[in-house]
Image 1 (cartoon, one colour):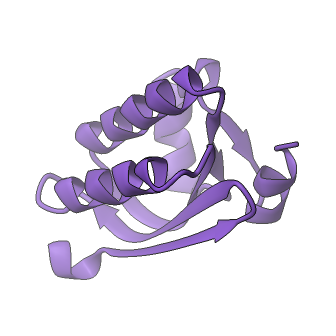
Image 2 (image 1 turned 30 degrees about the horizontal axis):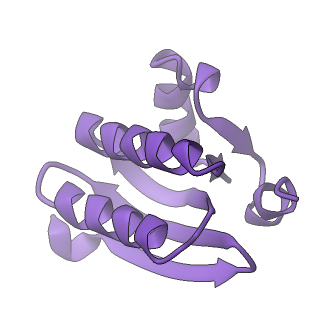
Length: 115
């Protein structure tokens, strides 16, 4: 399924943005993880993960987001989620991620949440 995953990276100020299109499964998760790590390594203090066109997120994908969250928080940053697809949002809610990862209805709202 890796061929189905498309990751689009960009930046807006000190915010790194990762748009996830397609499934993050056991095959494609290492690519997803690597892209998240690169955003953090390249100086993005804050990270927005846009999940509007994400069709599936495996448990390792959720774990990758939490790993980057910990890393960015140690340097005074944050990771937030934006525009979640309904199927992704239901898993987000079921896993109790609301307690850890903030969500916003759109990419613009998420980017605007940072000073």
